[in-house]
Amino acid sequence: MAILRIFARHLAVFKKIWFTNVMFNFIEPLLYLTAMGYGLGSFVRDIDGLSYIQYIAPGMVASSAMFAASFECTYGSFVRLHYQKTFHAMLAGPVTVRDIVAGDVLYGTCKSMLFGLVILTVITALGQVQSWWALLIPLFLAIPGLAFSLLAICYTGLIENIDKFNYYITLFLTPAYLFSGVFFPIHSMPGWAQAVAWFNPIYHSVEVCRALVLGNSNPSLLVHAGVLVLLAALLMPLAVKLMTKRLIL
Image (cartoon, rainbow, N blue to C red; front, side, top):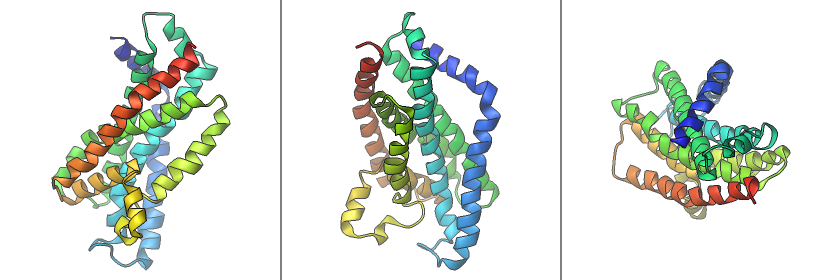
């Protein structure tokens, strides 16, 4: 399949730069865990019966996965589209725009799962995983990874200047990250803010990761996963349409 060939091409490139990619996504969350968990955490009372580092650790897994997918399908996809003209070269063969989008999204999703697994391994080594249910997290991360990859590639299809990714990161990713329940519980916020949180995809990812790390499996996790699946389903045709305009029309 063309999608798998595109994915294999991206993996071949990743093999040459994997160490830099992995170390960046390993060190930054580790610094957050150390500074926030052990530093700030010594001044913060327990949250929902958990120490502060226990509370934020699962959120670091979810956020690392989010950033991995988002950066790959923004900067990575834009470079392939605008500077390297990789997508244009692919279209010279038996490949469609849908194949290109699907291949990039598949790659972004896999990186999301990989880097989520890296941080899950870190918090496990730090003794912050309390249940075997956490083994399901890398599989679950395929869902938010898909959603965030599609969100990112939709934005990539809209812009013509790489500097405009600053808007995406500053005005969308950063607020979504800060108000996702990673650092404080959403239920501590006003009612309207709790309602708005349901439109924040990283919130759903954080809720599932935290529940699995703590062993709190319950049917509500399916609702959170379902919201992310619905978002991905709505975004896929939009991503193809936007990239078609950039590549063909």
